[in-house]
Length: 327
Length: 99
Image: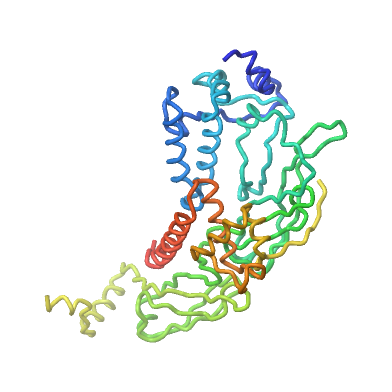
């Protein structure tokens, strides 16, 4: 494929390779062959197969690892280019290695088609990398004036769901300027996270999509140092001492709604579940908190501590392995 | 940078039409999801169907799996039930893993 033809087809290709303006933004070169794990000589069938395999492996609904979503997007983007003979040829023109190391200089005025960002915790539905956008997007997707819903994911803290919160999201949307040019504009919107929202639920922000469309936000909880959510219920480990387990007692659970006293029963077992009714996520009905007891032995280091345990060993006849003897 | 405070509400009930819009799918596909028991509407006739709570998230997930991986309805139904089983097992496992 002739370079002149490529330049005509994708005008930004030229500026990508040649522009070295310091106003330009940096972006990373993407090795689409590496992303799909195929050779540069791979045929269309092989590329399709590799794409399907990668999409299955990294689909964010299936793969819960933190980088799955990014990898899934890479796989999709790579396939978008390599499945199309014209785009693939243009991409191949860049060479196996980018001319100036791993970074390209993008022309001023390029921008991603559509994306959300909020400390990297929210992602749009189909946003490709800056590298892709610069290469292949001739202009930002023009607004049709038709209402269009937008979808994004937001990660919030469990505490926010208990109390409700205001979060500011940065929304990048295409806007038509007075000269008819489409530019990307950052729009900050403050979103109210309603009290009692659970993981997996969706929020509708009316009128914040394209035109008069709505913005839909899928709620995910950030990992919490103590609690694991399950619907409206929260699960936590409650470490206790052997004597607390034997004698019973009280412990304080730091719940997202505040400190709550919890009673440890006498002769508590390790793994026993205690319930704090109604202390889970607020709602009708509110969820519960389940604390699983974990008996933790103290490290014995002083002679005095050692003597105490020796005393226990002498005084208490208890064989936790009694059931081994029959077999 | 204009700051606005738009109204936001939790989506807890959707009609068939609104669920289709939300998932970006056509009605026949949602009807199929119902026929496969993936989601369960309240309401006796299709015109009165309302989808509540987890059914909405499940339909959304199903629509993504179909769109991104080309899985048919029977496949989506199987994948979703296996995923739910896996997530439940992971939650239980987390209760026993002590680090």
